[in-house]
Length: 166
Image 1 (cartoon, helix red, strand yellow):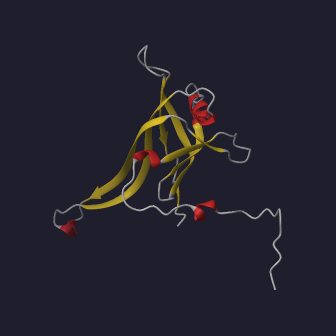
Image 2 (cartoon, rainbow, N blue to C red):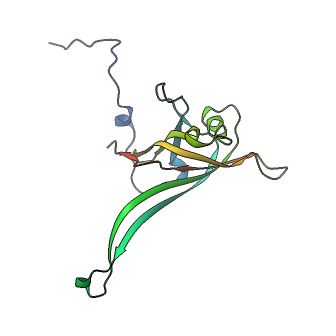
Image 3 (cartoon, rainbow, N blue to C red):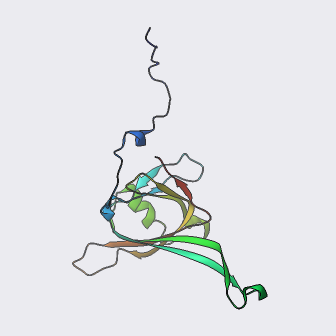
């Protein structure tokens, strides 16, 4: 006897289960960045940021050092802090939701610079940075014959969430 399939149900579909499994090396463009363009009270609306050209990642580690008597001069260490910063160079793309949202942070300060941000790796791992600080460092600058730039840094604001979808 066949099971009855309920049509129109609101069951979530895990689309990542249908994605191709990646292995080996990959080009940098397969990394993708999304930012939540909705206000803090609304449901998340993660949008890609158009025309990102380069990015660099910096992981800062806080290491405490001490030299107790029993180690006879050898230093002991413990990593006690971490932070993540992603520096992005993009082109200013007026009309793209993600690009416009980032550009809109240029003259904000305080809590208004925060937004949920995520970095999706080609193998499906997602690093989520809740309430990341978005620091716009170049808004439309460049040579007269260049495409207007958008450069920004995304800085972790607390512990990131790492989701392995495998």
